Structure formats: C-alpha cells, structure tokens
Length: 102
Image 1 (cartoon, rainbow, N blue to C red):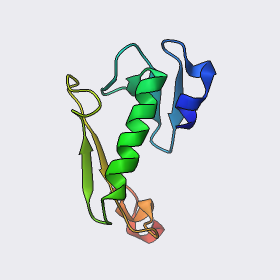
Image 2: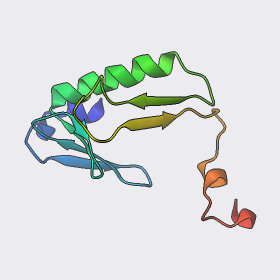
Image 3: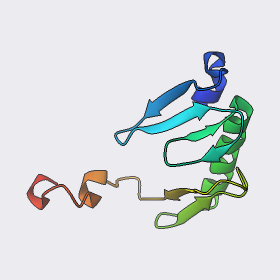
Image 4: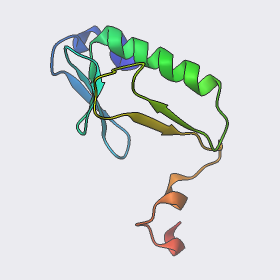
C-alpha cells in the first residue's frame, strides 16, 4: 500500500526492493507476477493489497494462500503466502543456515 500511495512511483519501470530476499514491486502497464517482480499500475497495486488483506483475514497459521487469477489471470507465476505463527523466526526455516546458528 505504501508503494501504491507514493505518487512518485507512478511512472513505468519505477521500482522498490523489500525484505531480505529483495522482493521487487514495479510500476508497469499490466498487472502480473514474474521471476523478476510483482508489477502493475498503482491502482493494480492497491487492488492487490486489498486482495492480500481479504485473503489473509480468512487464514490461520499453517495455511498457504495462492494468488494469481484474481490479480493477473494471464501471468505464468503466482504469489504464494505462507502464514506463520507470530513468533516465527525465519532463520529456523533456512536450510542454508547451520543449526548451531539458528
């Protein structure tokens, strides 16, 4: 929502990177998911935020939520959210991190 609310992002190819795995949100002419970014217009991003909010309201820890058709029916990729407990530590799930470092 912050990305979509920032009018300076309302130009094609504007982008922001988020999180430790560098999720990219990019302004584009069509909504979609690909191996590079979640993309679309600012209105599309607001619509995606509403979809995420509505779908997460009906989930519990341990559920997975797949979003594709309701955002961009013709995209080859999907957004999958894995819902975890509030005290979840992502380092514990990292297979590359040695157990003694978790």
